[in-house]
Image 1 (cartoon, rainbow, N blue to C red):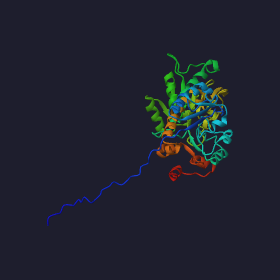
Image 2 (cartoon, rainbow, N blue to C red):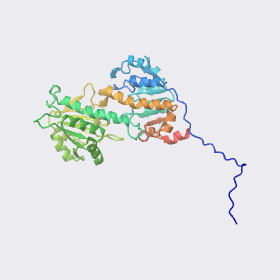
Image 3 (cartoon, one colour):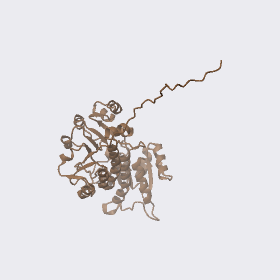
Image 4 (tube, rainbow, N blue to C red):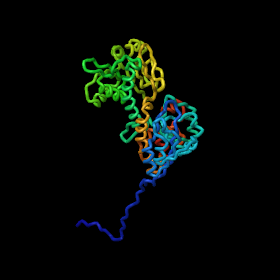
Length: 404
């Protein structure tokens, strides 16, 4: 029997089914407030006049407190010329739905915070207090932290920039304190022809360690780097592009090297808690008189046993004849460069949030930004903080999905 061909009747109607797509919302106008920082040693400002100008030209509204950029030498005039509104009352700035701060939220800020406000600021995990966090949760705040903010490539852009500044600055500071005018040893960092180079020891092969090593090598110093991660030591060598003296943290080798060095830099980092103390008081007492210790990891407790927090006004103290420089927040001493670095990350982020119709939509589309959110509408979404203060932890992904 011959095979019949399929019959296509004109009575059939083939219609495509509708597919529901996630339609991009219309852009929203953001109302951004920048208060003047009163926190200890904070000179940075989170948005430069150039960044404010871009935001305003894209239809957003920016309010800034009088003299907020003073420490960075950005006068009010530059902000008003960029189109921002200058106000003299802190409370008025805090009425903005989005607050952008360059220092963590402090106790004095709490009464001024609004319900459902979005705050973009650093959080210092070590200095965070349980009652402060609870009050922010009660006000249903959404908190985005600088330190945990990731970009498309999965790295932390603001932390990286601040580490690059700190690493490069360390050698400038060391050079200054080795000079005779600061009661140093009177040694030129690096040295010259015919004179053996100064010896620099760096503890930690992260970004700070890498940039400190770059600056020291450029000046002509002899550099030795210690770190317990062989991967980080390999990465440092590859990035710098030359063979270097590296070692894992072995106390006997470390003690021997510290005895003969001019500069020792503590650049160890710790993800959650305090940095480990790896240089004992005895090791410091055996160091040469007039040598310099710069403990960059003092932000998280320090890695030299003799370290004590100092300030930008009184940056050093002497112990066993060794100069100790233990200022937390070194990038704040180079406030303009640091402000530009923070602003370069935040300005595109705010523009994107405006284009997406607000931060909630942005976080829905950009999954990598979720790591930076520690509070979402009053719910605590940072696991470290929930464990430390024994507060209820909520998974951010579930929260965002449930609101869709």
